[in-house]
Length: 581
Image 1 (spheres, rainbow, N blue to C red):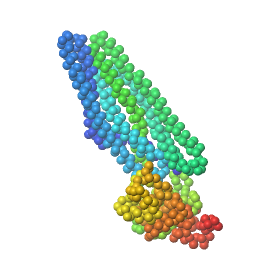
Image 2: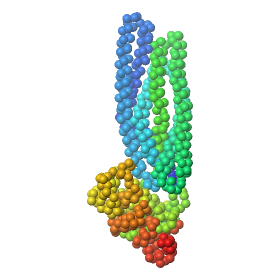
Image 3: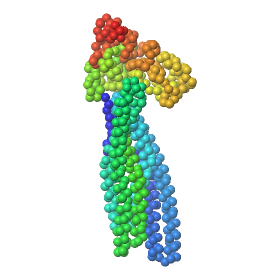
Image 4: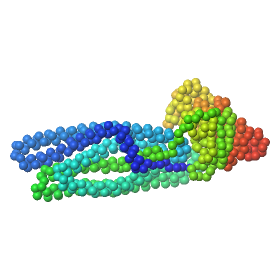
């Protein structure tokens, strides 16, 4: 059962953006000030050029030359000042963007770690990965590059329009009316862009999941002859991704040409109206020229905004996906009550995945501290689901799973790891040394303790590595096969030394002899601890203190191996079948 992680709405995204600005308010104020000064310096040139035109037209020759020289030097000085201020504003803005991106990354990591394991596992495959990689990278690059340039461009546009209005209000109104076309088409684009880019991100998540699972399960795909089916799934995901991208491309093909045409309209309007006003003596020639130059200056900042508008929309969609984690189900407040003992009790437990049918139908089980319990039963009986509930990964829909009379799922993560550890056949090897892969379980462990833990699970191959514990494994470093990765995970369990260990096919990738040896070694190392084995090889059940037989989501039988064989019930039938009887 999969479920889509939530996406934040526009209002939440706006609040998050304002929160980022408030978090670095002084720096943001400096950015605005620098941009305002740079924009102000940029306004001087066209205004003085208009003055030069009027001076040449009206003043005597020698006086005009002196005035032109003086004004030209001021123009050069103001241009240099604009360049310096703009570059420094861009530098400060980039620093602001980097700090903000760092806060977003940290907040995303904190929220991800706060998600219940069940929420992560039930999320659409690849969704959380793309949010933490593609989406975070998109937002970070936008904050670093796009936002400072767009802020500069917006300030420049506002100052230029204000300058035209000051020179001549009528010409300024012409400019504003001509910009209505850009405003209309931009609003049309923005109303559609957010949904379009969210669709692109969702399609990328699905594509990443399909490609990743196909690549990681290549041997299974080949063994079961699923090549055609996986090819069709990949092609469908690629087609969806292409379709969503073509939709956003169509939006841009409407926006950009319209805006390009709209660039010309303000200049044409000012020249026509300005010429008419000049003929009537209502405005000077220099004023018309200055306004026309100002409007030519608008093209550059408008181009900047339009260049980044796609990135801003894509980033907005990515930001909505990142902030959406705030609305995802969070782990509840950990219980402050410490378990009274290590006794695990399962009382009337019912559970269903999502809105699907119920998997467990009222399970009752009392697990004594220090005993070795095997849970057996046919596929689909609910064994692994019960293991997840015992480990606190999921919460029961009804009933209770407690340790020392405290709900297991309410324990704080660090307390839960000391209390109960679930080990499955799915193990992750971090791209790090063997030593650091083991120290995750117990950071203060000495090398001698690491070697002892490896020896306990039969991982003698570590001694044969070129650098021993310092050998880099995972990723593109020294490769580990499935059995070695499993032994590494079991060694972590030995180091963690939990009160209760739940093994769900934890030795499935080992050969039978090694698997039995590892299980016995674990039992010896964890002597006095509770071990619950989801048994798929009945030899494990034979060695257990008690066996719980599950059928159709219920505990059908409970007792020792000899008792259940003598009872000639479901377990006895499984035992005879396993032995070929």
